[in-house]
Each structure stands twice: as C-alpha cells, then as structure tokens.
Length: 66
Image (cartoon, rainbow, N blue to C red; front, side, top):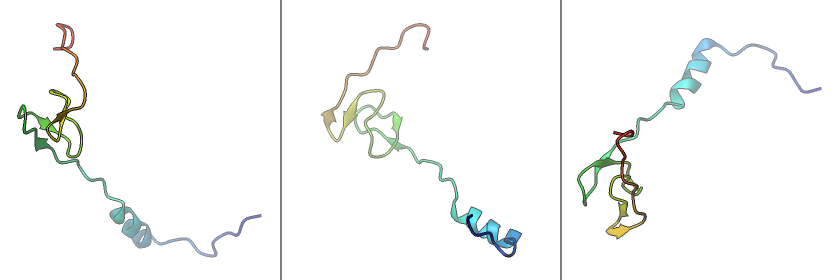
C-alpha cells in the first residue's frame, strides 16, 4: 500500500502550484523573407525559410483551403 497524506492540502497551497504552472501564449515574429507572422525558432509556414535557408517547399493553397 502506498502512504496516504495525513491532512489535506489547503486551497492556498494548491493555488500557488497552479500559479507556477501558467500557460504562456506563444509570441509571433515577422518572417524576414516574406513578412508573415511565424513562431520563433521555427521555419516560416508560408515561405519555408529558416535563417536564410529554404528548409521545405510550401504547398500551394487550393480553392478549398482559402
């Protein structure tokens, strides 16, 4: 059997823990090649460039995706 706590944790103690685990909204940066917004340290989804190198060729959008 595993040990059980003698007393319950207070709501203040639980709130401190929840405050430390906060959700951060990812900031976006402008792509130096095309100017669209992208996540930092990742390849641009619209042009496919990362640090002046083309990493992948983006797919062309069809009429249904627009």
